[in-house]
Image (cartoon, rainbow, N blue to C red):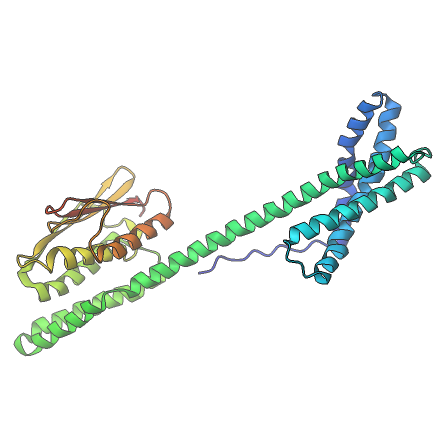
Length: 358
């Protein structure tokens, strides 16, 4: 299921302009303090510095707004440049802010301080002043833009991860081995004439297995009792094929059947045990299913007495099942873990640790 998209009501242009108007004087305060301190720290110098800074703040701020609304879009449309867009935007914003600063200097000359542009050094200082303002404004604008982009990317990554988890779950639910179905159908065919009652029981269990696999697609979690019933049906069908070679031991602590776990989580682990610890051996093997509550966690063990494997290495076929379960647990969040204990010749023990939930 895709994450819901929250749509925020768009701000009206009038509200945006009011926000810009009310916040712009704040940008003038740092420059007022700097230039007032530089020129004697008197009330008159602070007042004059604030007036000049205010004119520059409004002029450059609205120049940058004009650049964002009209200049930059037109430049990007006019020039099919190989450079990244942020370089083109940076140049456009810088030039626009310099132009806005000279407009501000002209306004200061006319209305605030008639001697503001009375020398060539004043013109140079105006350009430097504008670069200082432009750097401040542009830096804050880009910081906000990159922050929003980072948040959007993070949300997109989370949505993709959730969708991948759903896709992996659907794939896992669909991956009940085709060989299992074919072997079961062959066993049913051979039992029909020899033992019709046994054939009917296998058909019923096979229906239970696939019914559970289909119905579990509508929910993320299932009760441990339901998962165990599903595994018992699965193992009962395998026992028809393997006979007494397949032995099952259960140690289920009373009271844990109501605990919740990701649906169909244990099936790949049990299937691996049947395929690699029991089926290839003439003497067969034993599969152990254990479940217990330890403090605020649920521990489930799928063990066998098969050939085992070296730590860090999985025999052919084990890796996909174990990694799919491990990845599902990783995506489920902290507290979900799969631990593998195995020694060659002494079987394997797969410990699934989950937060206790009912």
